[in-house]
Image (cartoon, rainbow, N blue to C red; front, side):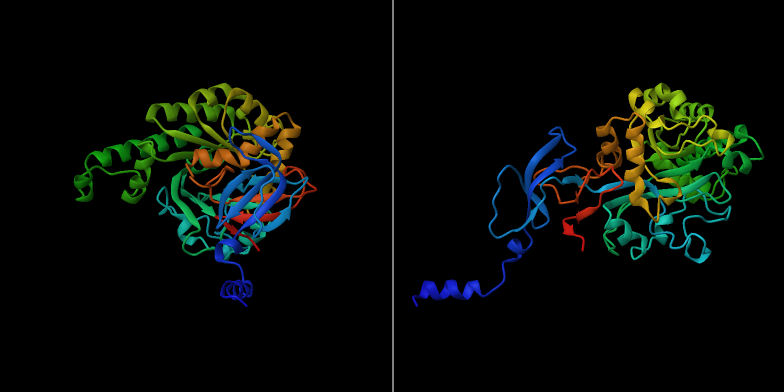
Length: 401
C-alpha cells in the first residue's frame, strides 16, 4: 500500500468526526419558518453542531445522518405561556406543590423559580411531545400579588434550564382578589394602587425607609423592590383578570403607571378587544375556555381568541384546561380549537411558536432560519391536529432522545 492509501484505510476505521456525527439532514420537510419567508414546501434543512447551517432544495451532506421528512411538518419548539412546570409533581400532594405560598408574608417578591426542579417527570413527558419552553408562574396564597414569573426551557439541565429568571410580577384582579380584599374589587384595586405608590415613594428615598424613618408601607421592602422593574417598564405586570369591566380597570391602571401589561385569562376580552389592542396589552388565554363557571366569565365564548386577533391583540396560548402543566403539550389542541372557531391558522401558530419569543425577547427559539440554534420539532402531521405526534425534537441544538 502507498502511504496515502494506508492513511485512508486507517481513517475509514475510525468513526466520523464530531461535526459529522452531529450533522443531520432533513429531506423534503414542509417548514413553518415563522419568519417573513413563511412556509417552505418540500425543503431540506441541515443541522451541524446544533445550528441550522443550510435551508434549501436538493441539499447534500454525504456524511450527515439523513431523515426523510416527506409530507411532514417542521416547526419551532412549542411554548406554553402559563404553567407550573417544575414546581409541582403531583397536584394532590402538597409536599410536591411549590407554586403557591399560603402566607401573607410572601407577595410580589416571591421567586417561585427558586423551587424549580429540572428533573420533574413532567419535563421529559412534555418535551418528547414537542414543548421546549414554558412560562412558570406562581399562584397567590393570601395576597393579591403572587410573585415573579420566569421562562424555562425543558432541557432538564440544572445549570441552563432557567432562561429568564424574572419577566414580570403576577397580580390578581378577579374574584380571588375581591375575596381577599374585604369583598370588593374596589378595595383590591385600591390595594394595588397603594402598592405602586409605596414602591415609587420607597424608590425616591431608599435610605430613609431602610433606616426606619419613613411612613408605614403596605408591602415589605423586598416586595417593593420587585415592583420597581415593573413600574420602570423593564418587566411586565401579569394580571389574572376575566371580566370585561375588570379588564378596562386594569387598562386604566396600566395607562396611569406606564405599565407593560399581560392579561392572563381574559375570557371576556372579546367585549373590549379594541381597548386591549389600543393599550398594547398582550393576552395569555386558553382558547377552549368557554363555560360560565364563575360570574366573572358569564360572557366566555369559543371565538374569544379570533375576536381579539382581529382587533390586533398579540396572543399567547396556554391550555388545555387544567392540563396546562402535566400535559402542557396539549396547548397545540387548544390552538387547533381556536382555528376551528375563526382564528387564522397562521395566528394560532404564532401564539405557540413565535409570539412568546418576541414578547419575552428570547433570542434563540421561535424561528427557523440559517444560523439559529436548532430548536424545532418534526411532526408526522399537522401540529394542531389530534392525530399527530412529534417524531423528532431538538432543544437548544441537542436532539431529544
